[in-house]
Length: 181
Image 1: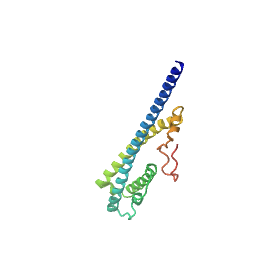
Image 2: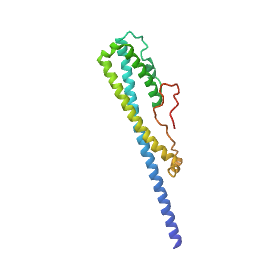
Image 3: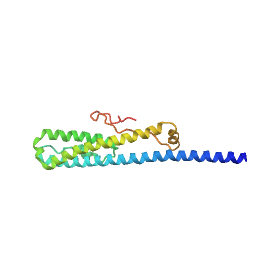
Image 4: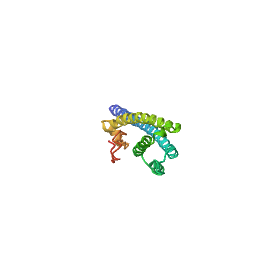
């Protein structure tokens, strides 16, 4: 009879451990889904920003005496495979160039299409800030699970690693690998 109780207790203990592992694993999966959702949102805003800057280069060429290399770095981005971190930095540089054209050629502000693009670029900045915050909040919670006991045991078993924050580093410097862990 005591062997039966021991075996039953052992089976119950194993089942509880498996349920705990499944529960922690599912929490990780929820975070991964939310992280992917946030990355998709950031990606869509960056694509929108890219398209707007691309359209603006044609408007700038048509309405100013600027040379053919207007926002040429945006054109170069089409052929590159970049992460959202890198694309955000490159588009930030292009946005600064866009604003320089706006200051150098004040008459372009009279063009309705240009003004519309300018407004949409400003709106996209607000969106990207909100999505960055959402992403970083999720990453904070995810990284806490990866690094804290006992969920770090499940992270080790399933090879879940800490993820980078998408933070507002100094975008004007040359260090493109300055996103913190």
